[in-house]
Image (cartoon, one colour):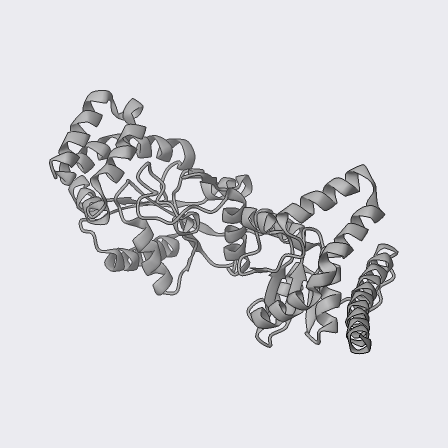
Length: 389
């Protein structure tokens, strides 16, 4: 009996110690939040702006402490999600804030994160692998402030992005507007192989933005075939901002003449306007060469995957031509189906050239599908033109 009571007493004391430990943690967290709310930090916060972060972005790990849903909608390229709250917890806390008030929401946040403190630290250490980290939330508020404090207490080198994700977006937007970008737009009808030529220009040392690569879509009704799922428009724009942040506006930057809408994502207005004012260099490639290029690109796709885009352009292609193209596909004559589609796409391209891009700076007649040779000739002809000016 005595031994049984002793064992019960020991168990009770062990549970009590655990409860007290959790209470102490909750009190510490609550203390921090109260201090932060009064703008009296219990440690020296290492806030940095976007420009400073850009200097170290290859050396530091960026931790996004927003919820997975926020992260999926759009995030700083290269950031890793270490959410302070789950999607459901954020809804609960947000509702509590609206219905009851600030302190009730903070208390609920503390209650939920307290048991997970060690999980945050250990996961951050695993992700960082010894590198410094920069944390951010939506606008550089309490979520990132708390995570900075916690990881610093865990012995990590931690910085916080001032203004959070919102500051990154604002910085990218201003970058697009403020800098005197020297874009060179590569034009050419469907099947000209413009993307491959851009890749060759990059290999030759030129600055390039591959819009279709960022959008994960080739631009036409057939553009999703063989591609991974597209990012959200928000994330596509983030990827564009990352590209611009890495480029030098003093030198030419090559892009492809795209529609404003690429699949389901769109080019932001400021960048689109700058592109449309930029000089365009048009490739004039014979239809048979372009047809062969498209057949090589899409020839291994499933027939039904090719049928669906033809259904989408029925109104512009015409019912009779659509049916003829689909019949050609199903009989194995992809070449004929592509030739039918090119009649529509060539008309659409010529209208776009006149409406959006204006008179080309140069028009180059290219007789073969040879991206390396075409890229080299482009650079030669552009240099000749510039020397004559």
